[in-house]
Length: 158
Image 1: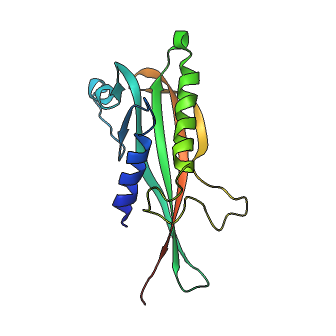
Image 2: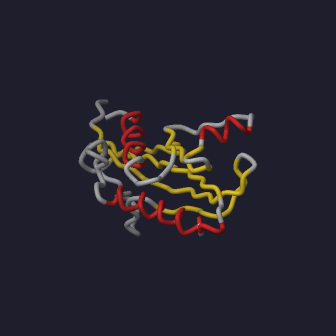
Image 3: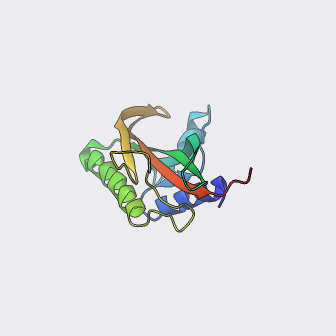
């Protein structure tokens, strides 16, 4: 499977979380605030995500295969609504994302695992790297940066 196929599978999996919002396969941006809000708008408020690949590493393993690890960033925003306890809702979306990736660590067979085999701490599936209030499109939002490491064992010919 290609990197593009992995990205598509991640987006597809994210969209299975009820009311997760808009999910873009890459970071969408506009200098026009109204257009930016429209890109991440869901049911009249900002609620959206994008997927980015900040790192790829390859190492050889003892079986003569190459281990490819891709670190994915899933960045999300949701408008604050204090009266509706929006932080609780946003936290529920994060947990929903963690649950759907934990349920199938091959993301439908596009990767071998969502675990870093070189990590002695056993990190697997979605990690919450950072969360807190942010300004996005001129709107006070909850923001979250999630991390996902995918691993593929590749057959590389010399």
